[in-house]
Length: 467
Image 1: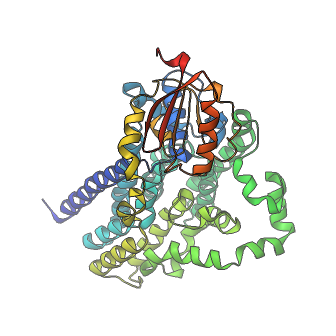
Image 2: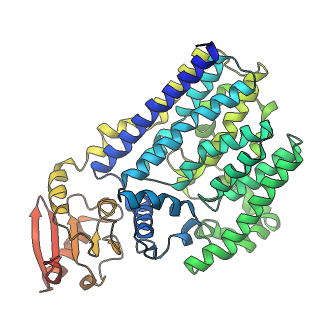
Image 3: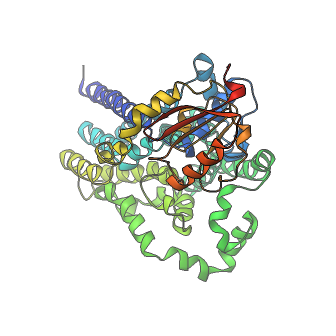
């Protein structure tokens, strides 16, 4: 085995180990009732309904699943649910996709003439970038599947392989509407920075075309409203065209939202894990990341300014590319592979939420066995009202609603089962709200309390008892 094959073998081992770790972590989190309705239950419910040949109208969102982000990839994933419907398919796919990014990163580094050790160091810095671990824990999001596709698209462009390039772009666009902005911007970079006119025009055309199709036709058709994210920029207008226009007409408002301490902190978090290789001379690829970065900076939504959620994911491939370009010209701030790996480990343990498994993920362990026991008695396909953290365990049915603020006066008669946990009521709920619901249920003769332990309540509609 020659040295090049040896390092390819090393990259493969990293992928396998990473898949096992990521899948185990997301599965344990789910088993501990720490996964949530937003967004795991939403996607699991939609995919399940597709697999059963039913209209994927997700009651948790009140819309058809395509009205969320026009993620057609969910129809492909539904094929796995036909084999056996299980949320663990999503954990597995996510762990595989996030980990597989190691291989094209390693290939890109070798294509840029980095030596074997440096290429492996860059691949390690990718998999240790904190958002990889954190996002793997944050339920499931289709865009996580795009990471290896982004790297393969970049590699295909460099190798002039148009077929795999287009295939990668189509796959990326099928995962989320907003990624069309990244694809379009990547086209601009390929044209201006790489002088690759053909590939650049393809990327630009596909990005713009899908953005218009998704935001103007698909999402309004399936949701009955405009793109949901528009509300995060309502200080610039109430519609997408108005917001775009005011970006140019009201620069003072734009600047007031960009020049903030929150944004400075966000940029530091984003750049810190890879700061050793971010040389300004090689920032040209970041043109591709600009639209998403700009949107994250512009909004007041805190979730778009951290390394916990999916919003910064499309920026990572181009940060990695900058690092590769810097090292290939001998200009990285840190160039020794061992030092790169040490820095990656330091930032990983500083910013990745490994400690959650010994702290917040154990907060509801006192009612874990009671909740598990109650779940075994839930009607198999009946409509259910429950908390946000229990919802992902009961999504293989037509209707799931949440016992959260605003549900105090919900029509309880529509449900076959009502499963509540007063000690740990879950996101956007409270013990007081659970008390209110329990008192209401007790006054309805059609409901029977079939399970109660450690303030975990399961009420069943009498008509569903025979199911």
